[in-house]
Image (cartoon, rainbow, N blue to C red; front, side, top):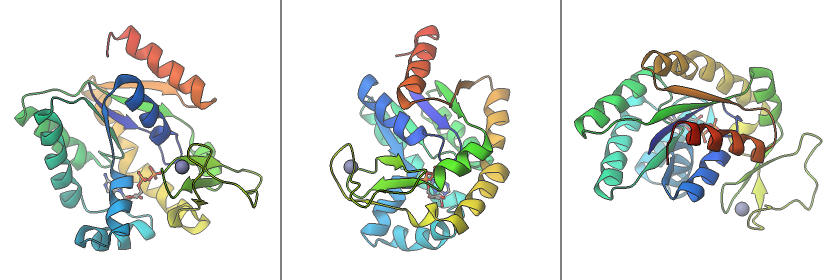
Length: 218
Ligand code: ADP
Ligand code: ZN
């Protein structure tokens, strides 16, 4: 299975990607995690990406496309299914993705939208904390308790620089302008499916699994 996950920042797609990865034994590529890893390791790519990410802007298409080109070729070489979380994020990236798959003689299984309205995304992002160790996220709408730690691994949690108020607004604008048009893009290609993104993590996972079963996808 080759899957693209779509949804706004805070839609829960990263968390669902982790669950699906385990359940279906496929790889997950989160471009946000990948870029944050490059920043931590202070690589050339990391230095380049940081200036964009801190402002909530997108890393240039050309940079992202060449990363994905390499990664998808590696997945095919290992005959491994995968979920893309955070790519494509612009229409040119989506066009490039379909182009690279065509060159690899394979097809995209579906683009799956986790559908959450904009006002709910803003509410979730402003209360989101992330684990330093495993990248799991948790929401504290009423403020973070002083002794809070990661429920998955016990790691230290922090608020991502781009989850701070000033940046959230910009990220939402960038999402609406650049990424939301992907919904129509994939719909026109007959590749779009969507699930309601309201509810608990388990409920949303259940909806996705039901959809996969209906479509006979494993
Ligand atoms: P979100 O929680 O908003 O989905 P991510 O962790 O996916 O955030 O990405 C964080 C930041 O990394 C983005 O705001 C952007 O600057 C950069 N980034 C990640 N993926 C891409 C991409 N495909 N194209 C351009 N920039 C990207
Ligand atoms: Zn953790």
